[in-house]
Image (cartoon, rainbow, N blue to C red; front, side, top):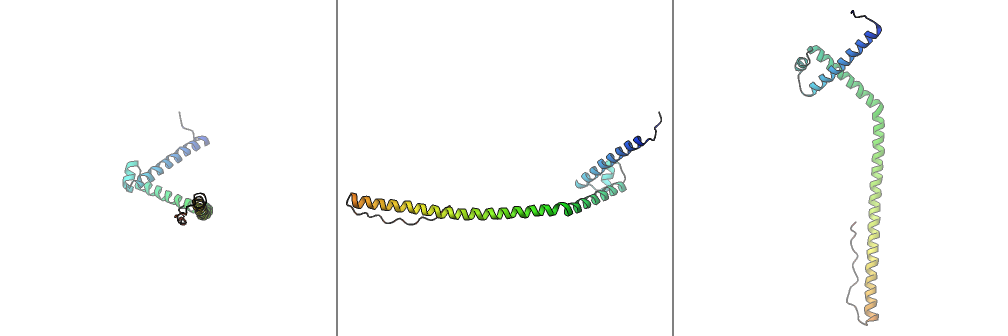
Length: 146
């Protein structure tokens, strides 16, 4: 049976060749990343050193194109998202610091109020109910420990 050069056969063959080239380029990059020299890669894949050089050049150009597209299209948006996130973190950190300080003051005031009330209650009980003068001193203000 003879091979016919039809449009479908040519497209199918072209598609297979493109997949094989992409597979080979992937292997070239993988072996290059593993530290193999270009002659070693050529020997492993049974291709010429020129093919390996060409594949590496093609991959470098694709990487340059991808980086340029990323810088032009995605990086400004990612940068803006990072700035917004940092501003939110900054604001939240200040809110936490202020709330902690307020909570610390509130806690200190509550402790003082309770402590003074116990002190006053002790004095009232000692002086009026029992007729004894208390020897306790007024409590000191506790330090804020959030």
